[in-house]
Image 1: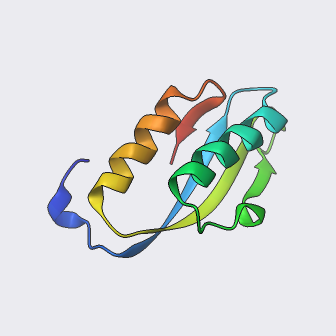
Image 2: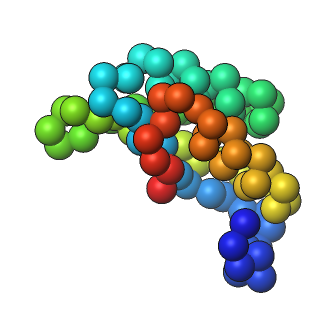
Length: 89
């Protein structure tokens, strides 16, 4: 985590997880697995998947409730190693 002094826990943390081209269903499944394992109270049905303007990519939009810095590090490490994830914003 960069600049830990700028983070104020607990906090709501919106993020967009952008998948590789053609990975719509795989992206959703992988994001559900990651979030479900790290945030057991997270409502997986609240994940909003939208196509890009051109339809080539899809993004999974979520709003997480984070309570500590370690959650951020663990989450980004899992998303970084996910084969369907292109980028996280």
